[in-house]
Image (cartoon, rainbow, N blue to C red; front, side, top):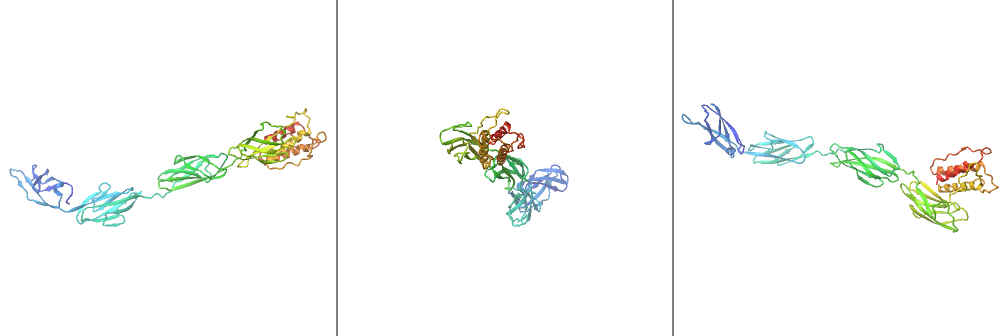
Length: 450
């Protein structure tokens, strides 16, 4: 028995024990249980073994005929305690050789003075032994202490570092590597996972902008603003250890929608008559992305750039005597254009089949309107047969209609628009008679391109 140990139950063996026999410890009665005539069991107190030394154990049988037995010497050896403290945020157990410590459940024990106690640390599957302190010697997971006094040692367990990166996938609006859209506002969605747990999902756009997605294992990143052209969108998943993983999507913003433009001053009507040789136009323009420029051109000469975009003013426009076809063009960042025409009106509108006589003025007006939309699309005016149409002299021919269709089709192609369709798609000289339907279709197609 070691000094300082806990109280214990002492079994005493002998002969002639009776039910009233009492065990004495250094002459003091101790609570005794009669087991048999040859065995007693006594309760020894913790105070009986506080210090090293010896104790005399005797048994007393009561009178009559009783007496005190011969004494037996009980040795209390000097001993010291070993206490184990487990530190760190990891987990593990410590056991001892000789046995006595299993920490876990029992983290201290007493051993005889001079005993060499070997403590062995065993981290769990998610932890590692970071180190020992308070040992006399350390060898790997083992700590050795030689007991010349009571000792406390500390085993520190740390979690195994998490070096596994998360996984992240973009699934919406596509799971592919590229995506093309005409909408400048985009929402991404997807999934993420990690061996421990995803803590955050963020996004960035190479063209500007960043933010934090809602959700982690299932996430949504909304309000992503796209710029015209290529946008490299990067989504990053992060875990608690700071490991990251990215997924990318190349989103291309295209703009095929032309702007809108309107002339509001000096009139919002189709024609305007003035005696002044100088004119100022004003109006508005809009676009799904943004208007970048407003320009003007006069069919009788002159062109320039208006001031402003969504609200614009074109001043210093020089007018020539007669009809001046004024074209105002709005352009967006993608190069889409739209024109508004001042003075786009036609004589005898509409032409009535088998009633309206086709005149040179009708032909001249359509030519002027087509030249205007050609110039607005970056084309030159068309080289017309019979460039000067003389009333009462010039005969309206099939070639005139063919040229009008060709010149207008080229303007449609330059605008990226589907070509108009015509009655009598193949007009034949000497066989086809030019009529009101032919010119009405051309008039409508010119106005549709404005």
